[in-house]
Length: 277
Image (cartoon, rainbow, N blue to C red; front, side, top):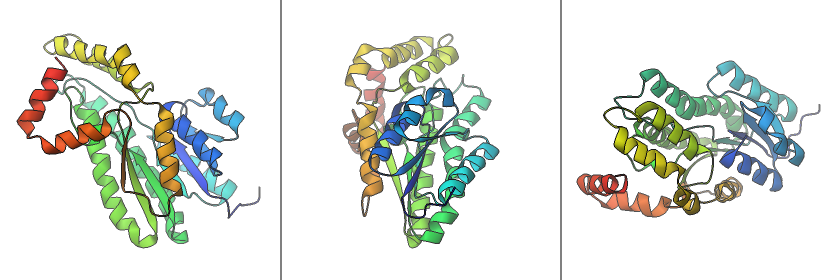
């Protein structure tokens, strides 16, 4: 296949559902060549039908991540946009979550994103252009009970992104953090399942089950924003001449981040404990 050196190329991870799926479709509609990567390629027919290239990729497997990036480079010669969206929420009390599961949370949410950045950066530096979008969360700026390992990964991703932005700015590369609030995706169901399995019995059971039920509630679903809102934000960022460093979007994101910045720790703790009782 001849190498296309003109049309911009995007790689979106976690593209089998939710924000990743919506983002891959939105970027394709914006005129980019889009590769959607995920472990569950059997769920990506919608992307194939829309003209998005589908890539099987496990971001925690270095051989898989490397092969995926090499395929894009072989077919199009460049990756101009990387959207690190792959991730999940592992919930449970710190006392209860096995350390191996905590490590896996970091492997997926932090190290997988960092490794992909390493793989695409040489080409971006050579062209002196490119955009890396790291999907964090309002949970990268605020904390709630039973989310220690999830919040830990998102706080870490924010810090990695800030350092990466400083390092790559001289090469014309933008690093953007997107901080979604409540979004209608599979995330809340997976987090509730993890929480019940980990802390649904024992010392933390009463509050843990209450929090898990709130994740699954119709009220949560009604108050959540559609993933297309995040996709539109990402598209705006990657097509901007000078994108913002952070975009807080979706239900609750801006007010909760602002409130956390204003409140002392004890006042925030009291607010969250009342809300999760």
